Amino acid sequence: MTSTVAFASTAPELTDEDFRRVAELTRQTAGINLQQGKEGLVRARLSRRLRALGLTSFGDYLSLVSSSSSSAELKEMVDALTTNKTSFFREPQHFDYLRQTLLPAHVAAGTAPRIWSAGCSTGEEPVTLAVVLHECLPETLLFRSRILATDISARVLDRAREARYPAEQLAELPRDMVRRHFVPAPGGATWQVAGQLRRMIHFARLNLMGEWPMRGPFDAIFCRNVMIYFDKPTQARLVRRFWDMLSPDGYLFVGHSESLTGLDHAFDYVQPAVYRKEDAQ
View 1 (cartoon, rainbow, N blue to C red):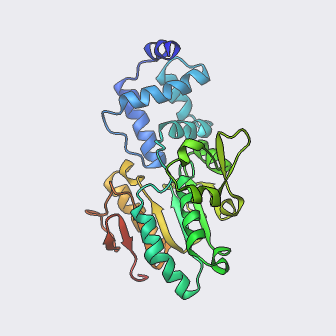
View 2 (cartoon, one colour):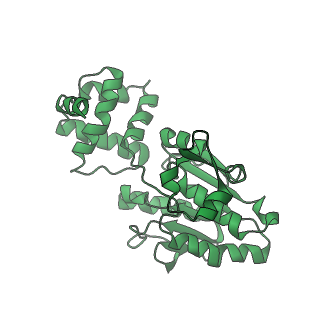
View 3 (tube, rainbow, N blue to C red):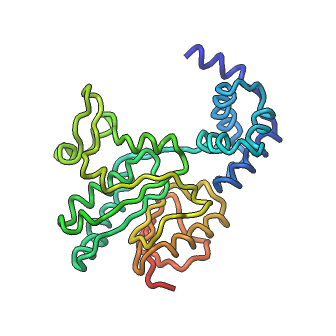
């Protein structure tokens, strides 16, 4: 604790111009809207990068990031500024909707769902989706179902691919669910997601502001608690791209702190934070 305080007290000064340049680079690269009031967060998180690189000023750091050969460090900067907060069955109403409406429709039609977790963080959301699919679909559909899980942060994707979680993180899940879908990892302090679930999920790094190499359509897109970091024009562009990636009657799930209100879009409102593409326009 002492060493942390000592480092914080000697961290380089972040000038208004430094913050403006960081905010502009972050907006251009990842769409993230760093507003005034976030100076302390930027200074704390990027000071670690300065220390790792042996730099003593944010000006020098930004010169490195802005140089033509610094694309790797630009990714590191965006990664450091990305907030990654998630949990299993977060906002459970969405998974209830899957169980009660979306998946029964697939069972009736005999079709295997394709779901995209956009902004998957350390993997709890796509793992939860895999659990729900395992518990709701017959084997004939389950083996053909796929979950794409993407995030801009290579750091959190490494943890997601490892699919290992502390025992206390699973404490709120029903014990029989844990026994069915997780196995104790060596040492006893962590649990590994079972192989049949991991095989359903494909993890990939993706910047939502860049090109999307994957091919649709998806039956559902989960992009929850991601768009709160974007300004309204960026949100509108992203929502229109999601529309194009969804199948007819596909669903878009956003966070409960988010809404499509005020955006130009063609989705129909279903319930809080759930929207439906009624037809292919």
